[in-house]
Length: 570
Image (cartoon, rainbow, N blue to C red; front, side, top):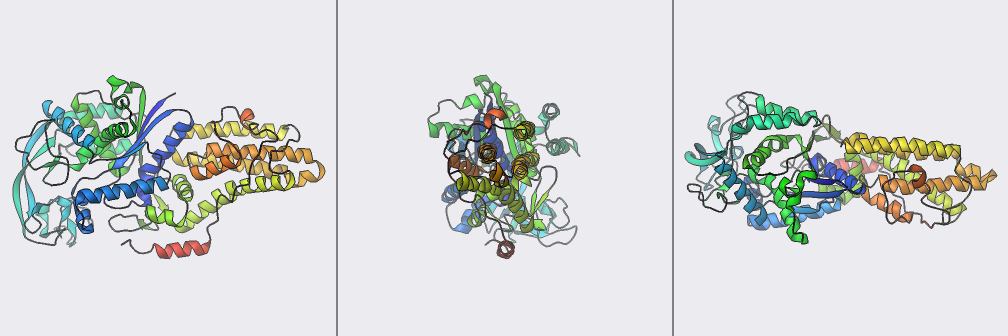
């Protein structure tokens, strides 16, 4: 039995996430976690909400609630939606937890002791009207390069030029619109990432099986321009983890908090502590410290490409710089973007389909299958309602659902609701067994390699093999001349349904559970011997005819949804 630690990028707290966020980290992570559990391995699958930073404060203010109350409510909402999509987290934590407070302060103290943190005096824009320092992205003005009047203090979205707030013409607060701004001197702590550049470079070079997307982004940050830069880890905010040097005060840093990018990845570790406390487990360090047993753990991270720099450089710099034996990631699976109908999904602009809206119109398995089978692995992919309709109807309804319906209804009609006996398997059945052995080996190989789209293709091919067998042997014709042969063919079909219930569970857990329940299979085992697997339902074994697993999506449905989601979410 292997031990797998799996984390997906933690979603930000300021609202419900869209389908692009879902397929960019959480859903493929869940696929892998479910698969590893199905193979009998021990899995700890962790996620959390990312709750600190200015956007959380602003979202709370917009909702008219204290930020702590807002974050607690949104965490509960995100947890419930994740449950609706069947995301099988062992724990869904919070970056505002006491465990993360203590661990973040601990890491800061260790890094300071190693001379990897230094104090920097810098100028920052202060809004008198708002009574606060403004992060660069919350300062707007006219771009000096192209004249765009809504450029941000870090970058102009129109011409993509990198900017400083002081570059903007007629700058204003993006919070209040006030132009009563002034530049003030302030002090912040910086992590000396540059001092760890060679260590990080060697570590990344050792990861020969990582996706090119992951390593190319990391290498760009390491080597382009002036190379890896030191990065601020504190902010002048009220909401966050107070700056402390371990258990001690940090002179000169009073009233400041740690920057969200610093504390959010540490929550992966703290989340294990939350899980332990919530479930009565005394030992969580055996998953995270190599001196406490984590040397045999395989750690896999899932995330969108925008999160890669923090997880390949900044978070590893924190772990390496601490000088402590923390478990480093073994494999980092990164994804491109899922676009929406010719544009981009956008949380800030409310564009696209959001997770709660998706569940309101269709069951989770419809979304899980389409998103995973169209996963943006090697390039960006596109969601359109036409493609969604086509994928659901052809794969789920026509191939899998139709097979289950035809086999079970025909059996009930001709043989009753128990597995019929009939003759022994013949040459056609032996050929199918051999074919499925080879196909399942390919399915396993792609799942182990975390090749999501290829895994979906291999699974669909296994479904298709059953349909082709059924079509070729045609028990509805065979029964007229040889009822025993038809009974055997249907016995094979019922065993195939049980097989599909087991193999499909990582992708479509609800439908898989219905298949297994209908076949009366309580403890499904991953198939290792196809001849044995396809005889597990013996004659006289009872089964039931399930309701249609999937309902086809009509053109009227897609037109209605296209119109419903054509605007922006309020």
